[in-house]
Length: 261
Ligand SMILES: [Zn+2]
Image (cartoon, rainbow, N blue to C red; front, side):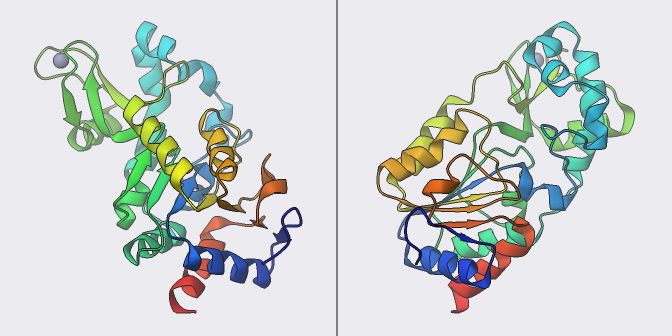
């Protein structure tokens, strides 16, 4: 272990230290962001210069206002992303986290991602703070539908999904800009953060509130903190271990050591 305030950076020792913390933890929570899904081919639309997203302004087009006023514009923007997410496969980091959960080393995964790649990898306890693309809700009659069939059709023909009961437009259950977080998921995420003895942040720059505040809630109650991300975060100075590297290569290493010594 390193002294608090002097985190280890990007070395084999940091991986060993992280694995040791994971092995010793009784209630470990993982917080994941876009960085864990980029190796699966899903662009981080909040990052500048990622091709697809630089053409339109996501803050404007991916907003609740645009969805209400001009849903066809939203769906046109959303179509390539929906396709990328729908056909994406979990990567080595998702798989390693699922194995750690199965072995009892991880209690909960809190994710800011809407791609369900943790579930595809086999993770069971996943809290989706920014919603999910697995379901759609009718904007008129509020019925909920499994997204698969509707999304497949939408990705193919570009026509916005329509409710079979009332002809209302179906909205993906993802949180758009200007929309509240899903209440139950947020309560669950906060509870997990406050009760954990270790939080592992993977692939999140911790820039989007309120989720970005969860590591502080964990730290304030004495939890250990591991940060694995390509860029610095505001809580790096308080972390036990910081690894500034690609999550898809680091997390499998940590899992291997935690599971097999
Ligand atoms: Zn309806």
